[in-house]
Amino acid sequence: MFSGPDLRVHDRVALDEIELYAELVIAASSSDGPLSQDEVDAILGVVPEGDEPSTL
Image (tube, rainbow, N blue to C red; front, side):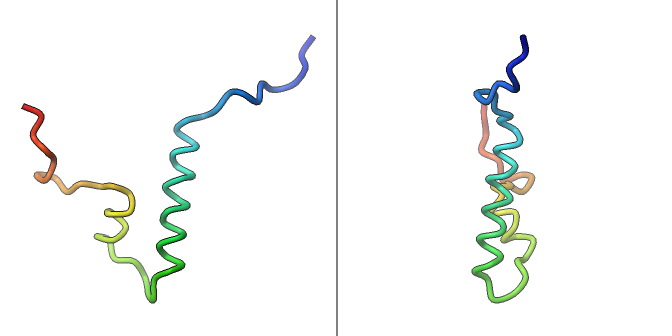
């Protein structure tokens, strides 16, 4: 007999996306104006091409 959804199951990707969105909302709400692309990238942890640490 089915007793409903298993509430222990988590969608890790969805939770990570919600956390990133929340960080953007918090930063935007505390900013005096629109966030620049560089600020958004920094909040999201985006590393510009060529700036990645070497793995060799």
